[in-house]
Amino acid sequence: MAPNTPSVVTKRTVTFINNQTPAAITESQLDLDSVGDYDIIVKIEAAALNSIDVVIHENANPHLVSSSPKAYGRDFSGVIIRRGDKVNPKWQVGDEINGLFNHLFGDQGSLSNYLVFNPDKQTGITHIPKSEEDKKDKFIRAAAWPIVFNTAYSVLFKYGQTLGPYSRVLVIGASTTVANAFIQMAKKQLNVGTVVGVCNSDSVEYNKSMGFDYLVSYNQEGTIPENVAKLMEQKKIGKFDLIFDSVGNSDFFPVMDDFLKPKSENSYYLTLVGDQSFEYDSYNFSAFLSGPIRFLNPWRKYRYAKVFGLPTKEGMDLATRMIELGNYNPPIDTIFKFEQFQEAIYRLKSNKAKGKVIISMSD
Image 1: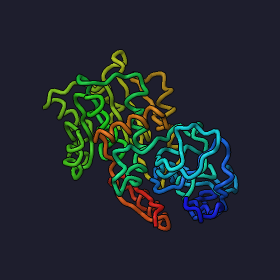
Image 2 (image 1 turned 180 degrees about the vertical axis):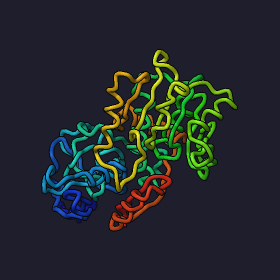
Image 3 (image 1 turned 90 degrees about the horizontal axis):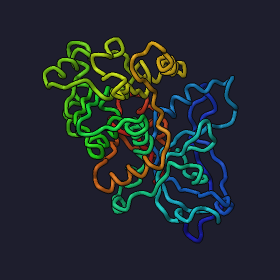
Image 4 (image 1 turned 45 degrees about the horizontal axis):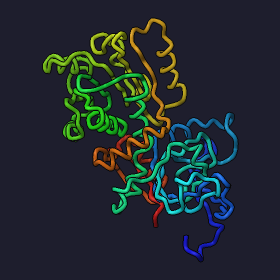
């Protein structure tokens, strides 16, 4: 920071108290020169909104949570402006970094102008690739992918499957940002042979350009399973090694044997949301019960799991390598200024965003 910059600054953070209170900007004083021995202070340049932010806010029952402010945001990008004496030397003042700030009902979040944390305890952070240095939108791009990429990484790498040129995958919800990261990883990193996607007919051409081999429109005549079955017959596609549901769907459960390989071949049905599509105005934590109930069902004949995109060093490192090689480009829908945070939340809740909703901290 410039020599004349005061050491005490005003920290501004988007917070909420519970689901009866709106999101609002709260202010506090931060002494930049009182950084802990193991902490870094990051000046945030951009942050992305994610579904989890809104879900947590809308399910913060006033009888169950404290009355203290709880911060919005997890994805971020920014610059290290202070570091403690005992911080790992890989993190230096001036470094441009991005990542996933992991918290639940925490008093800090990425929708803020500053973050203070111990980088050894927040493992989902990395340096912005050198290949991005000269791009004007580098901080916007860097904030757009940590959660979605790590979630897609978990789907592909955390369930003991070895997918490759002879593998077949079905993606329900091909247009989501997680599915976008998934297809780029599946095709450009794992060389998965056949990936079929389900999406709106308006998104077919775009999703083909992202790497999907075949697309089935959910808004055409017939059910989704019927139309996927027709495609499989026409293109001589065998049963799938993996069915990945990124939107919430139950259409395939009654006919799973017709689409998913048997357990003995290490097949999986993985979902992010559960059995029903995600609607912000009606979604609550009880919707999460569909996953555990189905997971624990002793009569289930297929492997089923609900995926949570926790930050991993491996996922962050892979994303960085793919970005450096030009093999991953995170889609961005809209960019809002910090003071427009409420508009950004509305955009996310509209379910109309075709990419990440970003909040820029720059003036």
